[in-house]
Image (cartoon, rainbow over all chains, first blue to last red):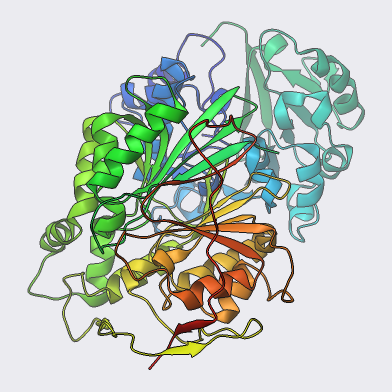
Length: 258
Length: 363
């Protein structure tokens, strides 16, 4: 799992429990790209529904989260949960248990890039956002957090990253596709067949402008007989990509909530 | 630019035992209010006095809320007064390093096979009883407890922990004579016998009387060193009882992060001004180089000492002064440093210590 935000009052964890985990299953790993509320909002329900991940990845530099008297009860409770979790998952993952090792997960390669941070970067948690590359067969998914454009440009200077992210099948757009963080150099390098915005039900003004920008640098596919380049959770609902061993893939959308 | 004020508690009580208790608050533009931080609580009388000061000048709350309490290290003269803070205040976060959390690691490194990990953990809690008590009090009031290792304390608070790293902390715990480990495996630190100072020597402005190669206890070296990034020449450095090793770690990390320690304007002199904690080279890094005689000082430093203490050592005060620092002692009364916060009617300007022409001899 990459991040655990929630877009409504319906718990994503409840959905996951029902759909994937049944009585005893648990997610193998949770990756928190950065600990902003909209990326961890449903964390406590991992405990409620008994689906705590076997492994956790988070940028330790971003923890602990400070709790202030001005925070709401819900924020306090969530931050405490995140802090407890960050402290709890402190032992190293062995090679045999690492869910990101292809030998353990049926051949999926996961590569993660974390930003080099300067002193001033620490004051905004968005700057901690990592870039994740998931590869299976000929497919490649690039999952970002809320990476600001300046940090993306900085990260592109890391020698291995350009080749790793290049020519992806799907890009999850940084910062929900916000215009202010549109980074042409990054998206052109990723050169995605499709871009996905994981955005709110209410359109953020800046996302309307950026959809066109992403459209211009996304290769596009034919889906249900029509050309598509950008999918958004706001308009398309839950978007499911299925990648198969025989190198075929499909896209399904569902607007019913879970 | 961030407005802040910081208080060092001094008590007019007959004692020669030094202790350090410090509290501060800085204004957060984002939150539109002050964040209150306590850094060490001295002995219990210091802790009580600090709570009174907080109630008088920091907040009107009947039960003050302290956002962050930092326990620099386990020694009683820094840790025990924090119990008073927990008794009288609500505390959001406690930053403290608890050796027993690393019992299994310590056990593996220098395992005494007559013990188990569990028994080592218990013994560590007993040995480090002052912080064990703090842990209990924090858990009782649901305070968040965190390790205090190198890095930003919280991403959106302008405080940095410059030392220790986790590795350095564990190494110091292993070396500490407090730690109940197999004797031949641990490097036991022999405290230097207290030297009665009989002679004094002449000290010249351009030449330090403090020297290289001195060492303090491993417990002191575990001190959490804090850099307050108040921006535009307002930054401060709190050192607890840190020695040359910890201060070197701090300076190395500052270099790595692009933190300019030479622009720090307010210092806590480590370990009550003891002369085994600093060296000329480490002061050059954390304070700055020696200024020509007659240069107007543009920095300040506070040092916490007991009424009847022979600290701070004159040679240490001189070492700070020749690096452009005005030194003030919190001895029989508390001392206050502030930039941009409200005035206090009942305070007057403090007098800095003078440069000593003769200082303690090393022999």
